[in-house]
Image (cartoon, rainbow, N blue to C red; front, side, top):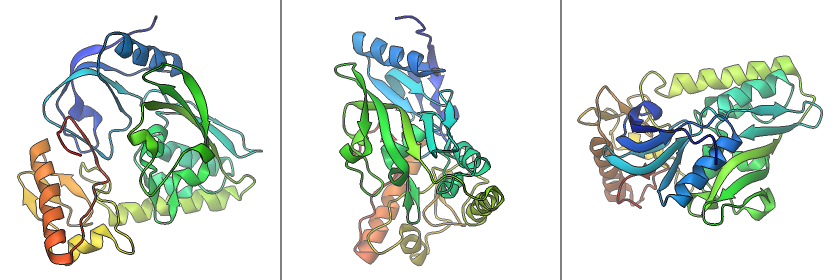
Length: 296
């Protein structure tokens, strides 16, 4: 195995959008699929735990020393667009806002909503990220994966993946996403698509706290309800634990005012869950993934 390059004792707060996280024992940013696969094989043969992070949104990493290898896919960002067929091939680290803008410039419809999602293709598929009535599984054709137990790489068709609201089997199985093929509608009006994409981002910036470090949405929306609405109805906007605060702009966002730590944020998540359960009888499921915690 060639191309095994990693750093030691790297602070992971630099690689999360909430700007929180402990130290990784080993850390690497592969530039392509080959390097990525070799790193996963290295962790397997050396009995090292292997964690994958993308853009670091929707992710709370504990302020501890995390043993094993942490791989950040953000430099695996190859995107190939066929403007005639509408097929897009993207590596796991390709950013959704980048893809959204490229789709519009190539006249492909159906991805305008992704401009405000600060995540990567791999992370978005794993979480089945979405906005409103849209979710990424609607545009997915297939996923290339590596099995961390057998080290086989292969392609899985969308029909063989059980996607649910903000959930995919990749959250629990032994498969790591390498790249994906997506399908969008070709031959759209480029000017209109550029305008819609721009307006979608403008709306997100007006209603969400883009000016401070955050995860994106903290909780999944309950059936026939909205997590942000439930939190706001309890008057929790602006409630703080340390430097972690429920955004005054949107109830389903937690922001890091300057030096919040992982425990303060986790405590704030727990307080929100308890208060909403007590007052509304609804248990809010976190959309945020926890890394390095004894937390489900």
